[in-house]
Amino acid sequence: MKLVNDKVCRKMSHTEVDTVLSRALRMSEHERTAIAERLIASLDDSPEIDVEQAWQEEVRQRVGELDSGIVTCIPWEEVRRRLRETSA
Image (tube, rainbow, N blue to C red; front, top):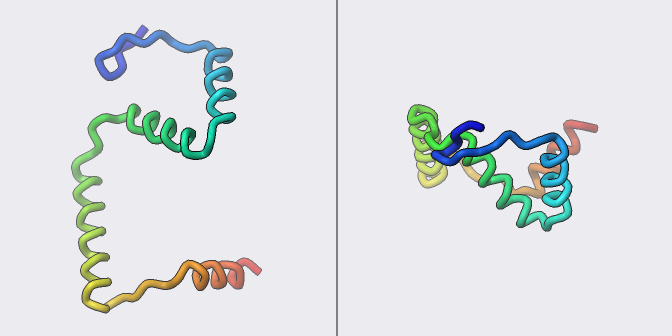
């Protein structure tokens, strides 16, 4: 057994993992998304501060560029068309 998030957890067998996965895959997309988000969050409760700060700065910069008109948004339909042309 090991401690995870201050809780004692036993190691799951491959059969148990397969059972949980099988049940999860039968759930709706919304339910699977919620499960995935919680599982990912459980892997590391303390995100690296430097990474978080870097992302916040990147978001601020991009919002500033949009607000000032330096850059403009491209509609999804246009992005999809360009991707299709590139991969053709």
